[in-house]
Image (tube, rainbow, N blue to C red; front, side, top):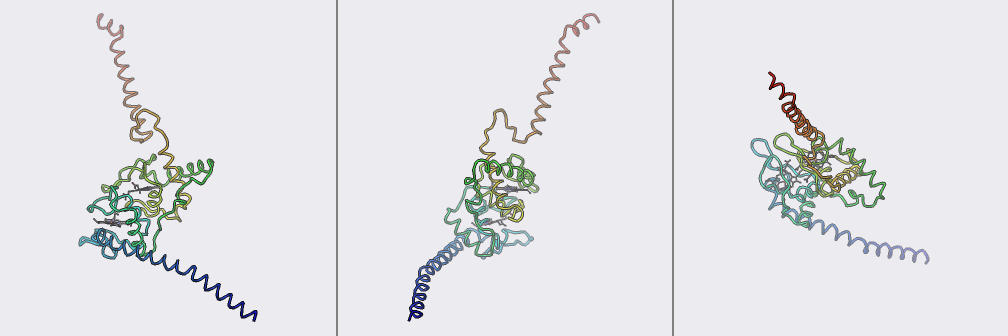
Length: 271
Ligand code: HEC
Ligand code: HEC
């Protein structure tokens, strides 16, 4: 009898647990399917002309791409490209520039869900991935210092040491990083838009990405200490300025003195 009761209790709890948990899962996959379906509809209207009806990309006769394949670029790439207004691209060109955003946050999420369903790729990062808010002051400072070192070795070649950007080959450019939201910095690192290399988590660990972001945010908080910024190009423009204006002024002044001393006047009189 006891064995039978135990069996019954076991069955009832198992069944109860199942009904408690299973519908939630089914609902989750349902909402995901709806997201993907809505994303697909948006994609067909706004993106398929360049990226193909199934995101496979469209190649032109001369072997170029109207738009690359999006299989496996992941939700992070869509969130970055659409969230910063780069996509939908207005017309093919050397570089898709940042511009006002066309899609709402909800629509962007739907597009991202659709593209993510095409193949596995990096997911949209969480705030806990790129925020240093949870750390104490010392740890925050250490993160900024480490981030500065990572930035100097990995990013300055293209983005300049102040993050103010620079020119790239074939009409492209690396944009200024001033004011770019943390999430988009993280996604740019993960997905490597256009001419930028991607820094996968194997290359640059998630904490290192977080530190770089902390460094860039610390640059934004730094006040300008007066005077001319001179493009933030550092020692080069400072040096040119010192040579041309500073030393040039001194040389001009020296010539002026030489031409106006009493001795040079006297010489003129006696000769
Ligand atoms: C006018 C053509 C055009 C349209 C329309 C367009 N794209 Fe693109 N897309 C491109 C091109 C070209 C690139 C490659 C950019 C580059 O590498 O210079 C690209 C790149 C991308 C990438 C980055 C892929 C990667 O490898 O990281 C994503 C994601 C993307 N597009 C999503 C979209 C979405 C979503 C839409 C619709 C809302 C869209 N695009 C509309 C032309 C287009
Ligand atoms: C080889 C050159 C190169 C290197 C190295 C590079 N970037 Fe970039 N980066 C670019 C280019 C080019 C773009 C513009 C891509 C575009 O417009 O889609 C870009 C775009 C970005 C953006 C997006 C800015 C915006 O306006 O939305 C961020 C953020 C960024 N880079 C951060 C970094 C960081 C941090 C590093 C170092 C870990 C780095 N990049 C290294 C070339 C580079």
